[in-house]
Image 1 (cartoon, helix red, strand yellow):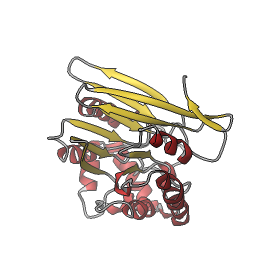
Image 2 (cartoon, rainbow, N blue to C red; image 1 turned 120 degrees about the vertical axis):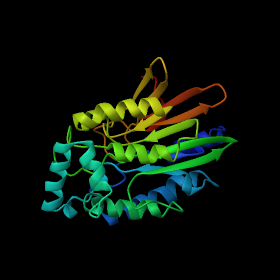
Image 3 (spheres, helix red, strand yellow; image 1 turned 30 degrees about the horizontal axis):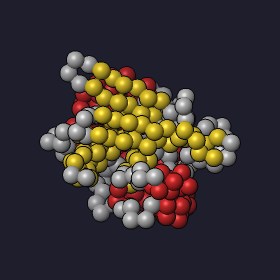
Image 4 (tube, rainbow, N blue to C red; image 1 turned 90 degrees about the vertical axis):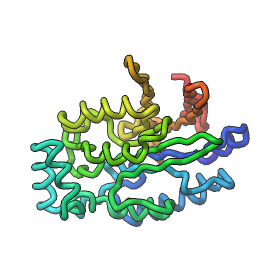
Length: 273
């Protein structure tokens, strides 16, 4: 990717922000994040002289969870929360044991803190940035705080508390972009419908990952519209196509242009699929 990014920069398309929507590591170990840092600094950022590392926008995926830290107690609490719904999730996250479930992402949090001036103890965040005179609100949502099971589809949750807390910090920003890892189908039913409706209503662009397949979806309603972009893979294997997207936002015209790139025949080309 670094070669493709370097070429885009030479053509006048150097990114203002870089979004990584999860699975930085394979099993959430500190040694894996050390390798990730090496790649980011020696390859990716080296291709973009002057890029501020604080403009790396990162959210965790299921592979960023250190499953060896998940206790029997936390699994029991997790099942209880998923069976009881939003009110139980809210109460847990605001309670004295709120670290019990999110601690599985501690190594990931240590990795991300290296690039940010401030990061909350919780693995979700909100930031307001001004670029080229335009104010943009970014919401970093964590769909992996309940990750750990082998079969995760339908067994995860964002939670109303997380959605509300992040949006409260971005309420006055007209242009908002959300990042998360999992598609809505991986959330428990009570959570999936509510979160999908909230994100589509409150965010212009929604960036996600997990399925290793690029996918674009425009959601139109009488009162709002949003664009959902699923990222491709970026790894050393060949089971899934390696791909990435350059997103160009024309704030004045409320237009979004997406440039798709895919690795084929040992080079990066335009993905016309």
